[in-house]
Image (cartoon, rainbow, N blue to C red; front, side):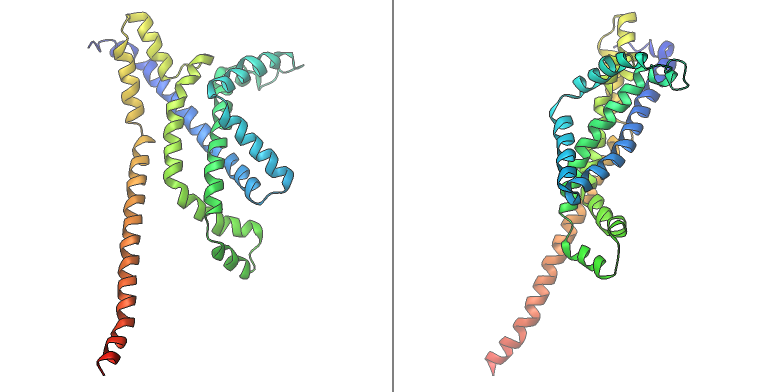
Length: 255
């Protein structure tokens, strides 16, 4: 394999890595905030709110991310220049770039998946804890902020970490809307040098060794270890509990 091209293209590689990380951070942070609202809308909202939230999640989870990206970039993007005064506004340098549409598309898609994860986690919180919070006089907002949401996030943390990794793997789709991310740099290197495997190998190494990929495995392993410890502790407590109750029976039978 020939990696002599790295010395020439390393500024582009760094720029592409920055674009990839920026897309990931924006879509995950904004999408998670939107997912919290969608999850609560499905769990504790009114009938119309639940229908709208479920329809949103069904649409974005049921259609390919690439199609959503193209609908935004080629559909909505072609209509924006027709808005009066938009080209002369300070927003136009942002709205004309493919990065904006990629970030919006990734955010909406990520929010739909995370909303379903959080919905299941919210429904899995024991009702006794919520009733205890209400007994203390907590309002609905305080109960959700201090008990319901933290318990749900803690239970769904391994799944959330996995979704972040999947989001990182989806970022190369931004290349199709003129975003110069890491995969776009690899494509340019392939066109310039006629090398196919080496640029893709660099992209693979970056994605597999990036920080979001490492915590996912560690969180899952810690979660499994914590579950195993709790199972061992509960079985030990049951054994001790049964032993304390059987000892008097044995003594009584001896008398």
